[in-house]
Image (cartoon, rainbow, N blue to C red; front, side, top):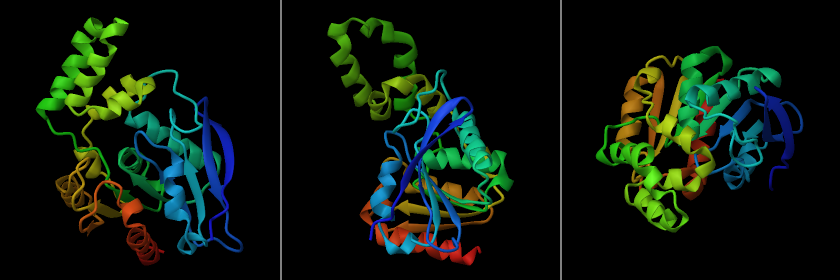
Length: 261
């Protein structure tokens, strides 16, 4: 039986924020907030939540600024600004001690949120979270190209070559969200290793063994640096383990919630 979500909107930090809300019949066990990844929106969670396993939880699915039906920021954002949006969202709606689940970029926002405002949430789940930034050649190349030689590619007839070059160095995320290109550059240059050490909340990490977007070594490093954390590795899974192995991921999350009530 599909959960019946209601679409709502709220103004947070002068931005129109779209979200979807589900309220169970009777008393809610816990309040859950889900944060999607880059190149995505809150609809990515709907199939995962199409289960009786979550029917007793109050659930909020947020379209992060620039995605889904939420407003595009007027100025480039960084992780701190995204985290502040989530913080203000929780305060505005008076959501008491939610458990927050973040995937990929949503996980990076959650890490920043927990490091800045640990008392705003009860506990957290990171699924293939981003935020570990290695000094890789391709990302250095990308920054040089984006900031230095992009004027060379401005003529329309050069557009195809520019896109091909970005893809060649692994910057599909940049190509897929041109309206957030400066925001993307802000995000990929911020390493969250020190923020991990500030997290006080109980944390569950869920990682696909064969995740190519955020490699398992990132999950191992996060688990090592977050004091009260547990890492569950899903054999054979990639970056979207909550889609490919939805039942298993749901069980991990619910067991984690039950252990931290």
